[in-house]
Image: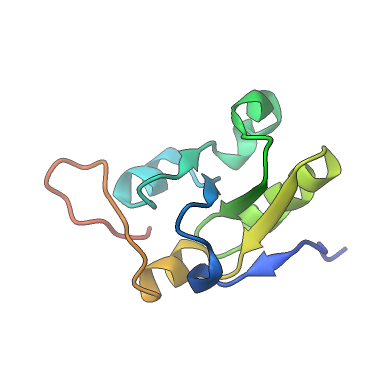
Length: 110
């Protein structure tokens, strides 16, 4: 069954948006948006208290599949979640800012 969630491109995400990154820890460490909140998809149900409840939450993963599932789950549970189409691959391609948790490492999308 296809997920029907609101979707935007990486370039449409507002600079001050709440961005929820649902990728795995190694993906996060390699490169992520500077102000993103990191909660891996498999931990989301148990960590809902960490997801801001006010306004839209933009959800991102590597390419858009996991984030679409996370956005659908959040929307079913009272949030206003939007999937970032193309994920971090599109984020990087759009020239949006990225940081790495690797000391001295250049941010990259795994």
